[in-house]
Image (tube, helix red, strand yellow):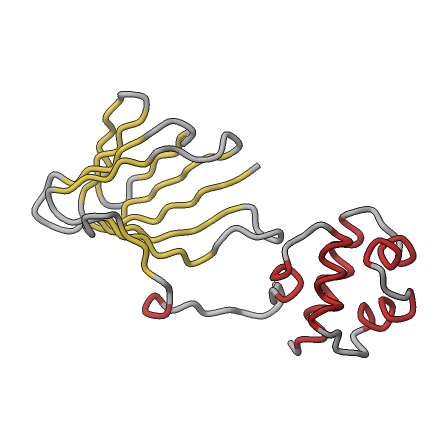
Length: 183
């Protein structure tokens, strides 16, 4: 999708989500109603300053209007192109395939934990659930002082608000898929 089409779709989506008509958003953004109509129609490419004004009028981050959210086309995400995040000691690694966005109320990660290592999570948003599926190795997950053993193809879900710990007590790397769902 071309950038003007992406912006057109997102401006209309966020305007409707905010419960605003075109006149109200144009006034809040300090741009003309005709300019906003052209932007939503995808017939013009707005300047950076115009995008900033619209975002200010909608009270949303600038990047949300530029996010391609076309759910009708397949999107391939390759692990080697994802920014790896890791713990301070480097033994716990996560790859965020699908970050949370206004169009997506979940995050999907692949997690790797080295042999004889552990990672302590400080906890997440109070309005969330965590789902974990082990895809390789064995993983211990401690939640609310209860230690849970998960082997390959086992799953667990829990409230991640409180601290929780992932442990690998074996000689092979443990891998898991983690979904954090936000409600």
